[in-house]
Length: 238
Image (cartoon, rainbow, N blue to C red):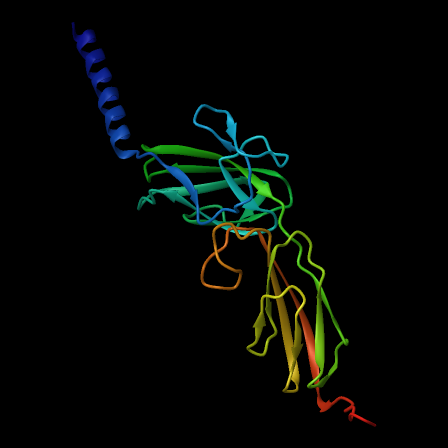
């Protein structure tokens, strides 16, 4: 009889511990701040896939190649540790929440997050497949070449690949959204010209504006030196 009572006590303790653990463990899930709007198949609730192909089979989240993306585990519980393991990319650190991940140049990736409270009574693991989208490659040339005389008209030639929108920052407070703009510097100095390109606008506004876009982005910077002298003046009729 005593042995039966002891068994009942043990079973009751196990049952109470299971209830307590279930009560303290919420449902954790992974979320990204923003995803690219390129069409990719997503995993359906039944385990199938929906959407386009683009060489992928299925994915829960999407990200751009060679980019940094921020991810959150919800809820972010005080006293819990969040340990990240990433395939196809590199987390900036191994623990924490949220987490920035630097993605590589592959097509498929995986995120695993191991979650635990201080005494280990509440633990969970979130596993998410990520499809990596090939982003654009920004590049440009300009004529004449640097150094350039003051007040010279400069022609910028855009040689970017895989982009649909462009944002130029000429380094002197002037910008442009043209594909191949012209620009003239009126003050001598050294200027960093930055070209940002994006693969898709989706439902957002133009790149560089306040309205966000959802395409993959790339940026390149080149330096132009403007000399403290003017170019040749051609006088009409001479």
